[in-house]
Length: 512
Image 1 (cartoon, rainbow, N blue to C red):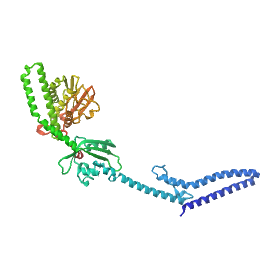
Image 2 (cartoon, rainbow, N blue to C red; image 1 turned 45 degrees about the vertical axis):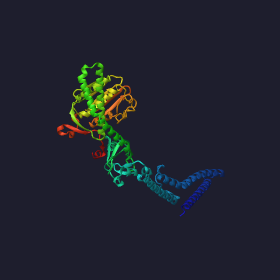
Image 3 (tube, rainbow, N blue to C red; image 1 turned 90 degrees about the horizontal axis):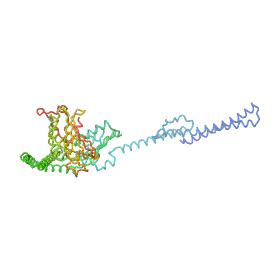
Image 4 (cartoon, helix red, strand yellow; image 1 turned 45 degrees about the horizontal axis):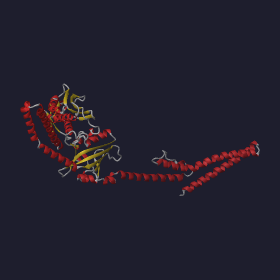
């Protein structure tokens, strides 16, 4: 049915009726006025003109309202469903006097088209958001995984399936910690980071270096860097995205180089032991008969032999840490005795460089749980660094106290070269050397790396503060023996076994 023609006919009829009513009203009012008041013709015409003007204005308003009300209701319907339009209620079409059928039909068409568009948009949005149909994710040459809020793998791209050498159905739908045998080089694993991010962040990012993964049917592990992005409010439930950067070849070469160096250095132990023995014999037998210059030579030889021995120990221990072979036996020790031993052994090396070690140990410190041999290396490394970098100054300070957290805190401070702020974040990295002074001061870049690993294995923390040309302060903590976990004590030995550094599995973190 032609609703528009009907609407036009209704408007025409109403307009004619309104015009007729207006004319009858004006003429009738003029005639009545003329008869009742006996006015002359000019006054009557003037009154009729005023009535005609007022009637015309009223007529125009009524016609305009009648003609535009259907358009207004169509506009109201559009605004009612528009996602970014003005907030409008649904139009009440039944209240229309003219054009009700036309407007009702148009509004129904608008609602139907909006429903179709909404369905199309939802379908398209679902296609866009479904990562399985995402071109970039599928063609990304890097292994890429997506996890939901329960750490279930909801998507694995083709590169990841190929990299892991595991069928897709053994990855998707599985918990990431069960499906993938990931190992991290410290206790900041993917699981621990996600646990913290879910509590304190809406979005977060992190990365790890030298992550290892064991692959089925393969003897060797792969090593890669891992980048992760966490988004708590992702509407599709894609909470965590992981990207892997394979560096197996490079990291394997580093491991092989480390193993080769360790093997080579190991061969130095026998001649070094003989060398140090001969130096001790010469010092005991010939020392009293030597003049001042020769005694100074003997001291320098002894100090150099000690330094070379420390270098050998560092290399071998780092190799053990990398292979997760360094085991610590923590026993109850008097911390003052441990420090006194190290300080006494390094006084000769310090004296050769014209540096004095000033040690201050607080009274009544509790006994500590340490592996005496490995913690000796920590203190020796930090003191040796302080002596080397105390260039131009005469003192190195060692202080030990019980801090406010109830752990034994030891600080070693020099007043020499200091460390630039841009270098501090990397100071404990393996092989890292300060490029500003590595040409003037020898070293391997392993002492601080080893020290950090050993301190962490003891359950302590290590940190550094420094200013260029003002010196550096290295601080580390060890636990009182009473604070060590009772379940770690090993009966008759009265000790606790710990692995230094090692590779931390996500599995244990997940099952806690």
